[in-house]
Length: 116
Image (cartoon, rainbow, N blue to C red):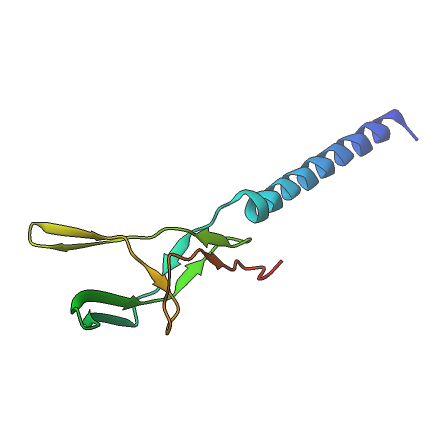
């Protein structure tokens, strides 16, 4: 094989190797290292109610949580801030499911891959 042909073959091999490495790095970034986002759908129900005999005021919001990450994500803590005029109240209690309502639970949201 002539020397110029060997140089061309070597250059083509290096370019293809660089393309394969960049494709592998992009795939690793999209599937392993990117956290994704946690989103909430528009609430299907918002209710201002009283609970029990002691008439404690309760705000109930039902909505879906969606994870855009490939591997899923864990929700350990949530809060909501309710503002009216110059007053704001932080609601730190949240529950999952119902009835019965499980309070203070950790929720694992599936990613695009599902259970793995």
